[in-house]
Length: 506
Image (cartoon, rainbow, N blue to C red; front, side):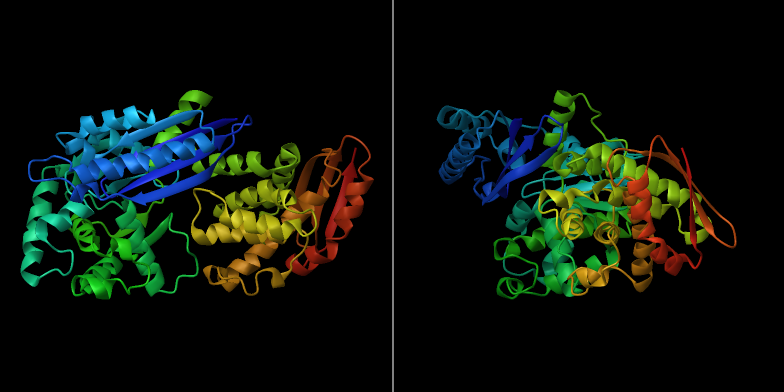
């Protein structure tokens, strides 16, 4: 097992993330520490970081170094971004950090920062084309990608903290300041013609983007607290922007979703997003909970594990990672998934569902037994919880909920599992009906490998107007599996209105 520590010293905050990479290739985060730093506010008129900036950075880095020792980190990757990059004495600070902690803090360029943020986004969001904006405290990185490939990137020296400082909008935004701010920010963006009327989705990375998403979620009583892949319209943002511009600092501190530590710099941050929407004419914003730090991790993981830097299929890759982390019998899970998908394909006339549901069935089938790692009894319920909260990428929030329900029902429909669940409103009544059909396929597939021996090698599902037939090819006696499948015959007839006929061929 490898223990990887990633440190990100930004203009507004500092982060330490420690992840484990296991022998199986699976990985997960085991520690996260965030500290407010505000380096962009600790730079004088001559571009020098103050003594306070040095002292606070060294104190935080010593804390991070201690935690790295506690977790016995095998590798420490530490980077500094805009505030230290732009400071005349930034390299002096990194030298002192090394002297007092032994950690080499690398100052990365705006281009490198943009590239790493792109890696964090493209490996965790199912977007083919878009514009990423990584809005930090002292800079905003902009990345254009098409067909999942980086095409253009830029770094503008404006972030939530320094924009707030330049225009003195920590408390309120005077009406007279709005046009000046808009002109100032837009003049920087106009240097990059590829932004102009791109009409592509904007993908927001960083604290300001996450905070905007939280505020919009709270205003709508959104049932999930998940931020990654949360989508909202440009009009929703503009409504929030107008509301915030008319508030004082004290009033903003009371707004749900807006933390007190960010209330004083949010006007500067949202002003940048507002100008970006105007430049690009984008109609929607997707929030990414992954960016620079995840990009650093993927860069390291790809190089040391000989895997592609950019995943071909993020849903497949992230599902496989969860499977390797928690499955007690991966081959059984794969076999069950294959059987379930064969039913989905062969019985299309029965269920009439689109291809988008096939990926949900596959995901649920692969992960349907991971709850056994908690407790075998009621493991279907535990699997559902784990699927709902796992880092599975490439699904909308409602799709991930649907996967959880399918897995949770693979021992039979039990509506009480989700009767009072907070995320229940994510699904429509039609979704619950679909979940029941897909859960039935999973239940049948699970029955056909009940002995976890792959005795049932293959199946051929077919239908006519009178019945559904399941032809089973076995390598040896499958009496255990045949007994188990009988338990679901009534469920099948109730769901599809036709009986299930099973034919065994050895």
